[in-house]
Image 1 (tube, one colour):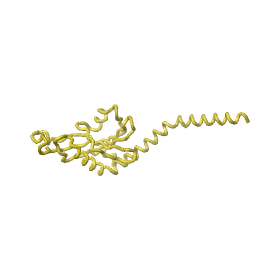
Image 2: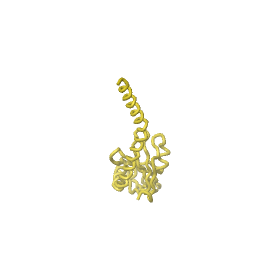
Image 3: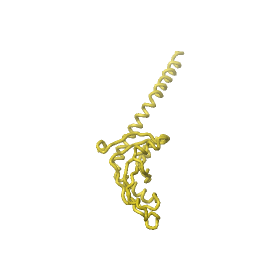
Image 4: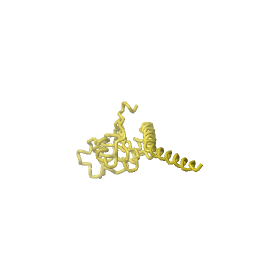
Length: 164
């Protein structure tokens, strides 16, 4: 009977060790499943999110002296994860058209009417997709991840053919 308590303690330690050994894989699998669901949710909410993005970006006052006229979103989506907080982001390439704001100092600039390539940023807070109208000008989504490589890591890319 003296051996029962040490034997039970040994079994408990072994079970705890096994659970801790398996936990990183289990957590990765759980995070992957949550990211997969978030990606499906993004596609279901995409049209609404693009409208919210345009409205937020248009009232941001950036770029100064220009008014947002139109934003044409690419069909492809690139997903990235923030290295620090593990927050998922959807990056969508877009083409933006501006016009000069009267009295904004840009009326005489010929380049105002040029289309601008950019990346629209959408973030998943763990429950919902949202956007603050953040835009990365002159970089496509892949270039954006490369530029912010200390902060972002590529999670996946979906072409329009696979996303439907």
